[in-house]
Length: 136
Image (cartoon, rainbow, N blue to C red):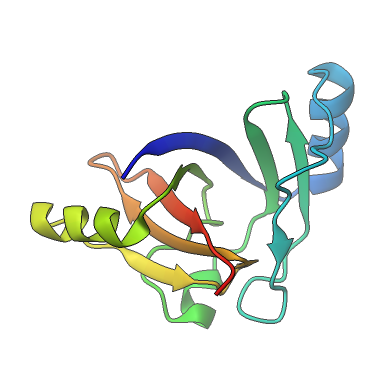
């Protein structure tokens, strides 16, 4: 169950402005591969822009404080933003969290097609995503 940093999600009310800032000022590019396909009819329909330094993506997501309620999930990853890790074995990672007594919200494929996502909080309340890229 290996983890690696995949993206940072910044929740914003200014997606277009943030996109221009991160591309023009920070010099980031629009990623050309591994760009998520959003499931806009399944709980989160916000605008999202994607930028990358070539290794780590930044997702500039429209803030949505109601997304957790609409999906029936306790953890809302687009209220304040989150950091995201990709794993090669989400089932093992979920078992690890359960063994450590860490509750999580299992969003499945509700937000991104082909990514099974879970979200949980660190001790300071920051949201962490762990996902596995799967086609099922």
